[in-house]
Amino acid sequence: MTIKIAERGRISPFLVMDVMRAANARAAAGDDVLHLEVGQPSTGAPGPVIAAAKLSIEEAELGYTEAFGLPELRARIADFYRSRYQVAVDPARIAVTTGSSGGFVLAFLAAFDAGDRIAFAAPSYPGYRNITAALDLVPVPVACGAETGFQPNAEMLDRLDPVPDGLILASPANPTGAMIAPATLAGIIDWCGDKGVRIISDEIYHGITYGAAAETLYGRDPAAVVINSFSKYFSMTGWRLGWMVLPEDLDRAVECLTQNIFISPPTLSQHAAIAVFDCLDALDDNVRRYADNRQILLDGLPPCGFGPIAPADGAFYVYAGIGEFAAKSPELCAEILRETGVAVTPGTDFDPDQGDGYIRFSYAGSSADMRSAVDRLSLWAASR
Ligand SMILES: Cc1ncc(COP(=O)(O)O)c(C=O)c1O
Image 1 (cartoon, rainbow, N blue to C red):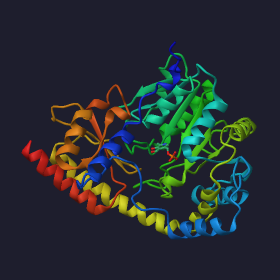
Image 2 (cartoon, rainbow, N blue to C red):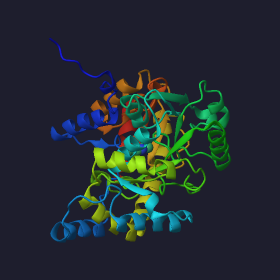
Image 3 (cartoon, rainbow, N blue to C red):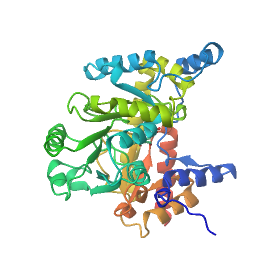
């Protein structure tokens, strides 16, 4: 008698994690691997965060917290909205989560029913497609190319039939770094308001921009769920901490779901994260390093034969076409890792339909690694 395995559990892998495993195996075998695959700052959390964590191990009891997190942390997050975006957020609206990943699960469960249709740009973060599918929602990728700056607009959304129930936005986005222009964003917000579409705004790359700063959707669309994380700008990936700013109508549902699914977000990380808001100068130094790294890749990749390159307005990614290379991106990425030791992610992770023609380079590492990566790729491309 065979025992059933759920269909909804059969989602695609998060390919970048598979690439990271292959890269780590090569590094363990003694190869000099450059990690341009994973979207993770190579700098750890700032010193005061570590000190706060040590202190809390010694002095805090580290039991469960309230489902929405420590009141002091929620108050610091609310302060951050005041200073960063000049918007007032009631700390009661803030739910601390287990990474933004935990936030997505809670937001989707609270806002949507099985069978509801959730639109998002293609290419985009694989979790949008894979988490929605695992929760029996219907992922609706909206193909976005160079013509629209790799982001959707109201006209494109208006062509969707049926109208989706939800729309995930990310500006800056992964894998492109592309941002949504203010007028386009205003058009999308209006369209969603007219059609009754709930926006989930993934603001995880806010703070990492190279031109205009990103605008939060909080306060601009009363139904929107704003999701953010300590993983990227705050350089705390492994601490598994994020937050949501919730609309009033979802507040209690998310609280009950959190209580039952997660109980509370990680307590040690919450104590530590309170300290990160005093470290913004160090975090902005990281952003300056990303800006240097971005320039190294923008200058160095086209002569190797990569391009065109999506608008890298923010985040720490370059999403580049594979040009004349006669291979699809998964095979090309495997070849690049094998021949050069540079680990990069195939575009198919972000866009199963069009991603064959793209590679994502993450520049969250050191500038020395970026320079070495360009040197190795130049030699490889020349000898190919
Ligand atoms: C756009 C985007 N959203 C969400 C996440 C999930 O991050 P975390 O769960 O660490 O907050 C990532 C991770 O790379 C991402 O790129």
